[in-house]
Image 1: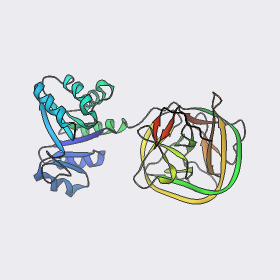
Image 2: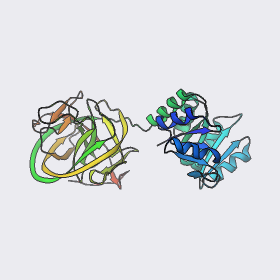
Image 3: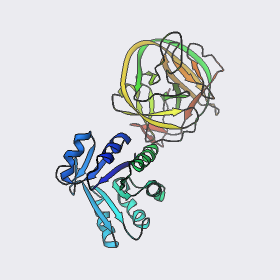
Image 4: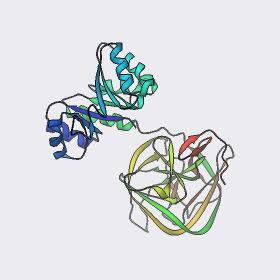
Length: 334
């Protein structure tokens, strides 16, 4: 994920407060201001000596005025973060530096337009931006833009249910996120990363329990769940503070964080389905009325009422996964 830092050369409580409230990742400042920043909240500081990231041991700030400066920045990027300030040329130096270590390259920006430009250079963009502004509203806008870049457009499709089978007791994972989810939102879960089902959040009124819009009763411990960065993890290994990718029925996504993960023994059911190409997919879920998959259009359908021929929303991909990363190899899972 790309990061948004704030440059704080002079003390301004308003800016630090807005940075904390907007989810800015770090504050680049002087050693003298680090204690004052820490008094207001927990945030990474980048500064000489007392910073969480130290200048120049961990981070170097380099002004690009000529090719020699560019070469120096390229050398720095081999082992640490380089924050570059361009002068006459804004794009060309960044384009030249991205191949040297774009995952450690940051650049100064003054507003949202600059941030958009820096984030999209060569389609990959810089690893992060360092915002220079005296306007709290600009901090909010830029931080929101960078945070939104962590979302991934998802090419969702319809699965047709072919069978539902009870299988007895199992360990299921209930994921309580730090976000309230809306209609048609949930987590992508499945027995194989090739086919994931959109398990709906428990945000609907029902006669059994009160709605829990932050909760997804997601499935068995062994299941794959989609997380940011085009990766998957096992449901059973999720814990407090981990990121998950919240998917919407319209293919949009957003990042949320695990507040709590509960593993409990419950009766389970296997859902069998096929995609439009005939590919077979399965998911193991708790057998209860409040556990729902997502129907086309964003509605929710309970596993208790699910029947052969029903259609639900899913996600498919080619290849396989190794330690959660997509790989182009033949893997058979059944």
